[in-house]
Amino acid sequence: MPNTKSKYSEEDLQEFKAIIDKKIALAQEDLALLQASYKNDSSNGTDDTLSSFKSFDEGSEVMNKEKNVQLAIRQEKFIRDLKNALLRIENGTYGVCRVTGKLIQKERLRLVPHATLSIEAKRKQ
Image 1: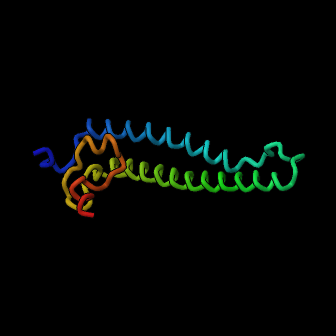
Image 2 (image 1 turned 135 degrees about the vertical axis):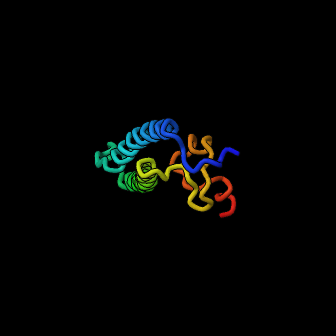
Image 3 (image 1 turned 180 degrees about the vertical axis):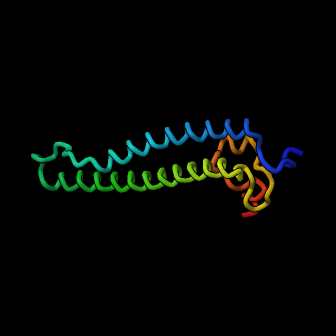
C-alpha cells in the first residue's frame, strides 16, 4: 500500500521542490509576457486609416487585451498555488490530501505539484 506513510521523505520533498521551482520560473516568464502584451499602449499603425476600419481594429485590440488580462489573472493564481505548495513543503504538510489525510500519489504530484487532493477525493467532489 503506497499511501501508508504519513509524509514524504526529505529526498522526495526536494524533488517536488525542484519541480515547483521550475514551474514557478516558467509561469513568471509567461506572466511577464502576458502583462507586457496588455500593458502595451503602442499604436498598431492605424493612425492614417479610415475611422470605420480603425474602430474595428481598436475593438479587436480591446478584446485581445481583455483575454490577456484574464490569462494573466489565471497565471497569477497558478503561481500563488505553487508558492503555497512550497510553504506546505516547509511546514511538513505537502503531499497529504486535505480530505482523506492520505498521501497523494507521487505521479499526481509530479504532474500537478500544487495538488491538495488525492484522485480519490477529487472524484468525490
